[in-house]
Length: 195
Image 1: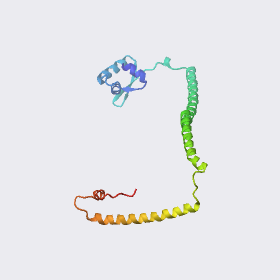
Image 2 (image 1 turned 60 degrees about the vertical axis):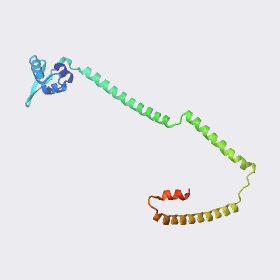
Image 3 (image 1 turned 180 degrees about the horizontal axis):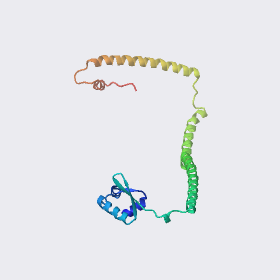
Image 4 (image 1 turned 90 degrees about the vertical axis):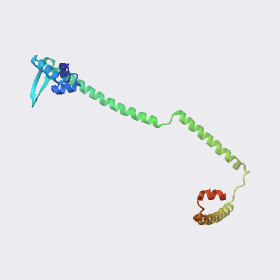
């Protein structure tokens, strides 16, 4: 287990590191003993690093890649990098296409919108029919001006009366009987507010 771990990681470790990395499947004392045995069998090498000994797996020179293998791997890496760049470009184009498709309305949404516009058009035409038939008497500009003046006059009167009413109400509510609120008094007197 320890030898397999060292070969798999392909880097130096101390006995403490191996025990911790294997999540205490191998205790520290057991790891030290196993590492010494493997070192004596020349399956691993060791080197003193300060107060601790660091162990690493021996690499077989026959396992080293030849120059042709390295060139083939470099060529494959370059090919894969080019493929990654091409695929990233394609991904960007597809994302942009998806975004534009999501931004447009679906056929069903367009049909629903068309139905709503048609209904609104029919309603407007129905309201225009009486005006087109001539049964409605048009309002003359002079009449409109006179009505506007009259409306402004009565609005001014209404605002003045409202102000007087609110001033009187403020005087009345200054001295309310105990246990009565302004809202209760308002209700009791049957007053109505201005909408």
